[in-house]
Amino acid sequence: MPKHAKALDWLSMAKEDLEEAFECFNNRRYASAVFKAELSAQKAIKALIVALGFEPGKTHRPTLVLKGLISGGLVSLKEDLMGKLNEAITYAMVLEDQGTTPRYGWETVDRIIKPSEIYSENIAKALLKNAEKVYQIVEEVFGEIDC
Image 1 (cartoon, rainbow, N blue to C red):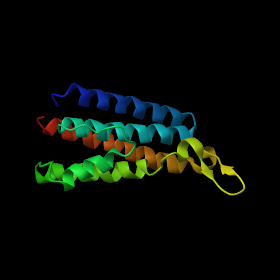
Image 2: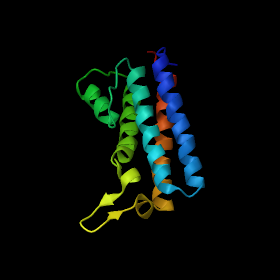
Image 3: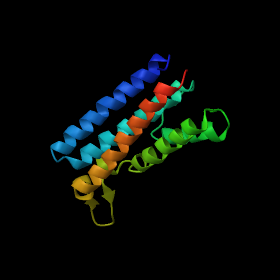
């Protein structure tokens, strides 16, 4: 497990958000579920960044920070772990790309398409699976690295 208490705090918050995402989903509040799933993925990636010995900074796109650390040669792990990092990034980016849509919808010339009109049960379910996968991968990596 990481020695950095902050990493564990980030991961704990990610788990709380993931649990809330499923609660929202079960209550058919799909846009809220997606928003919480997005937060969970962001916090899980921030946990990973901290566990690797770096600071994520204040960002809603921590995958960009992690990708930068990897491409800059600052993260060097076994090949299978690097694969897991890249897999987590891929799943998390889909959630980060939701941006403000789960909260504010899409603005058009004539109206605002509400988040509740955008996020169906199927879309929310797919995005929750992504968040769950990010959390699982980060948890696995935590078990395999010594920080």
